[in-house]
Length: 464
Image (cartoon, rainbow, N blue to C red; front, top):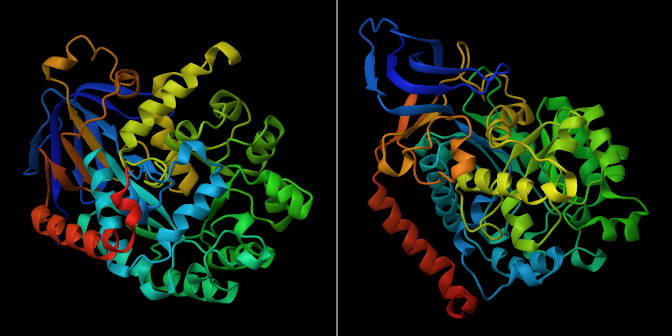
């Protein structure tokens, strides 16, 4: 059966994010099946479905490399005041809600997060799911896979875990605690069931113990062994306030601890890293270890601003993450893109210079693909996946801003819903509507689950 052809005709600009920073003006994109076949002027249509892109700007799909979808049902909680708390104290407080989440609550919270991502130009998302309350059953990641498939988003599922009990120094409620054996057994199951290694694979699995401070040493050591035997990537939180505790417990900083166990290299990336120093950047660049920069929680918590130019100097692969809604309250990666740029600009007086707004876009596209180990994503060029989004540049409020389409998103704060999102050659969001999804029916059911399984169980939602 021949593959469906689709022609994006006459785009005002196509920002490729390739190594040459190519921008095509007044050009077309030919998509066949899941793949970009050609980019250029006046491409022949040959019976392809036509999308009229006059006045539109086309970008590679954004790639989100750190999130916690399940937290979408604990947003806007002023009663748990993250900015006034140490990050590990906040973790302990919020876990009192997480430990009672149901399977339905996690499914619909994930659906909400992925919807927000798609509507704001994100085509591939990694989720770090470390919340496994016993009452929710063992199929939580499976249900997230179902939600992702329903929406049509490309999904990397991080199977996380917390294994260290409170009696030994962690902040994990007993209801969320797992043994290393349980964790790894489920990782093997998920990889066998869902991990797609082929080009343009829509679902992949990442083995992602939550954080060193809340896990046994053996959890990380055995993760390294299993992940490398299966050929899958690894991820964890690192450098976000735990170093003092790691020094007290192990006599070494977290990166030293991870490197000693082999939890570093081109198949590993960390989230946050605002406690890392230049020497640690250098080691990460040497080993190929990646980093997901999550600007929103850093600002909300008043943490140090990571030095993107220093990371670039040491050739560290940097990507962009929303982080969970408990420390961001949004799954809009365009918003994180804007915030990342402003943070770097804010630190310019101390550092002397700062990255361009376009650098932030490349972090969120080609950078995300590099961190996830996806050579088939991240830029718009023949042979790559047809993962892209488009904005309408003809709006009155954009007059005077579109002479530099590479920079306009981060520079001007263009963070509203996009005109179109395409994943794997399929239009999944267009002109304000998800395709193939009854949004009102899903919204009604999600709201019902939220009220029944979350709000009714926790009086924190009734405090302001």
